[in-house]
Image (cartoon, rainbow over all chains, first blue to last red; front, top):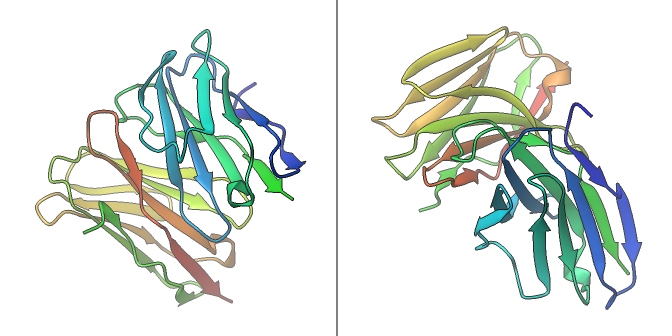
Length: 115
Length: 110
């Protein structure tokens, strides 16, 4: 597709369950970013990929969060043993250049609700 | 001091007026600057980016960068109700690090 694609668009799950969020970046984009946005709040950086490597994992809130990227394309963000405070919109963005000098293009996000 | 600072607003302007949105940053080595617009319930979309000191114009939008004073601004001329949104400033501090401000909520009053 032409833009960044995220799935699912909405996810409702029970506390304690694991969830997996998927991001398909724009074809050819080497850099991929994950952010979290709680209701009414700003963007919270989670992790950044350059190719398949994650040079910056500083934003991951806890060891329940992990992410991987394969084939310099699709990325998955996994949250284990979900908690109610994990409820948020999870946004993925990709960029054509890994140094941060080029704009990021965002997907529509996954709205995660933990019951 | 926050890395990227924006007034959260809301900033209210009448329809047809110029809206001025400001952003300051702390790292003097910052290189690239971006403005995104985010409508309620939607994801951010790129409005403009600027790398060099001075002004950059695109339609009704003008980005202004002053590296000596460490601020970047976005001017919206002939503001329309459809411009009502939150505007995010993002700064590339180098070393692959991009930091977003909290965003300024703009309300254009018909």
